Length: 263
Image 1: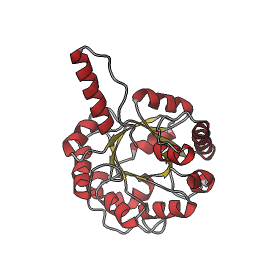
Image 2: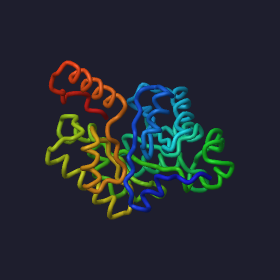
Image 3: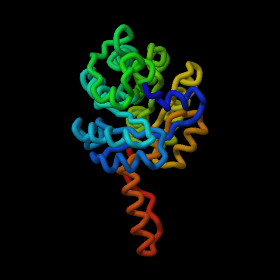
Image 4: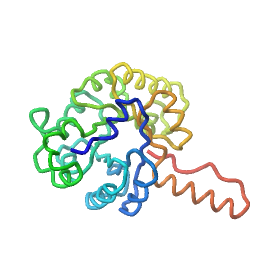
């Protein structure tokens, strides 16, 4: 089976730079996959992407060096299993607030006896190799999103879930629940404390700490802080930012700094 380079990078303590796609386009996915990202995530939660689009995007990513990852809409096992069968090599699952939810998520990603994943790997065989069924439990990456007060309070128990590789902070939702405002780069003391708590617990338990960022500079700061898996904005943010900068330069204006905050 094809080795999951993201797990190798974590074992070697190398940061993972992750692209993020909200626009349903196999062409965009192919372009992103060739830009140097370690992984590219197809977003089925807040992006405009359905299963058919996700399938074509995963196919496009298969021809690039980037590891294909999917953020599912929720922890519904059937959805998780279908996207793994479609060739996702990692799953990011939103709104994990309890160890029971974390266990349900991981179980859907693992074949028996380690989980409840139904057999039918389809594209998994094409991307992973003929021996995919024998090694998928080891290679598929599982990241649970921490986005709520409850998830933060249960971080120890969530990280103790057998088979969970780590957590991924959804900073806008976490900021919204902690401070009343959705801000991916919030400097509010409660938010700063929460982020440090997650990083510290991941370090203690040797699990991956991931987070969504609004820029490359913000991602670099998070890596310095101890994060292993960072996303320097998504395709929507990058397209908007590049367009605003090009227009401002063409008109001889100052480059604007406002724009979508991401998710």
